[in-house]
Image (tube, rainbow, N blue to C red; front, side, top):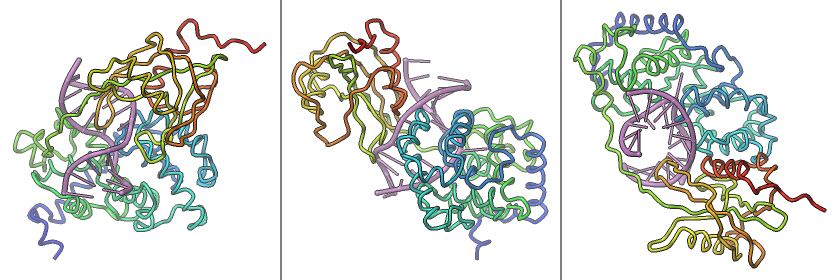
Length: 373
DNA sequence: AAAGCGTGGAG
DNA sequence: TCTCCAAGCTT
């Protein structure tokens, strides 16, 4: 039943499967990169690493992983932490819902599992932020359970090795399951990913160094780069955005917190928004600050211009120095609003583009916060 | 099911 | 400069 639904059973002889996985594991044992989450046994740490690695390169996640575990060494520490502290630790890593889900899941683990990561695929999958890949990765790496973990790397390796033009996630999981050595499922999964990251790369794969190139159909066909089939990208819109660095008479800066569930959820930011048709950037700045906070500001010099690409659109952000002319800031969306000294900006998590502006602000002359008399 | 969700490195 | 895409998940 299972077997007949897989279209390549010719290749799935026991001998072939055995040589594939033993060659792969041998290569992994000899050539795996040294990464901070290698040879880690703590299921909590493994979980943190897997969440950080979702859609994120290993070299970007590595320093965050180390810092995060220092700040939150156990499930209990994470469950008891403030989301703000977690977001500060996560600043710059992107996809901030991951931090929120990590926090929620930690609380669920304390509440429902006595503070230990549940040792089953199903229970892991039920945690917020844990999908099919992450559940399989934790189950296999932390608990030695025979579940596949198909990420983008593994998908590329498998579609090339078997020359699959159309492969659903279900097919790939089933295929990987057949090759899983029950003695070392975690190492096998990691080996597949490592091969994809280091040898079987999207462009210019190093087939000459590949431990399984002899059985690889894409290599035999001569053009492995045509796998996996990618779907056409939609072009992303671009917006001009104006933001106000609004100062009060004491030289403090006005910031507001973004709603939890939104883009950049829970981070702090300068007020601002998209430029409208026919509007000047200074007009945008003035209007947005007034709409969001109910105050009238004078819009003065341009502090900086930052180009930034988000996941599904891009912007050019123009930040202007502003001063309050009339009113007291109150968020129209009932969001937290705060006046902060420039020296305290490290206490808040900001999106990357905003952080650039703030850095420019702190560097710029004329920003010495007046000493209180 | 398709869209929303960050950031940075490589080419 | 621009495109691609990375140890995916959620709704």
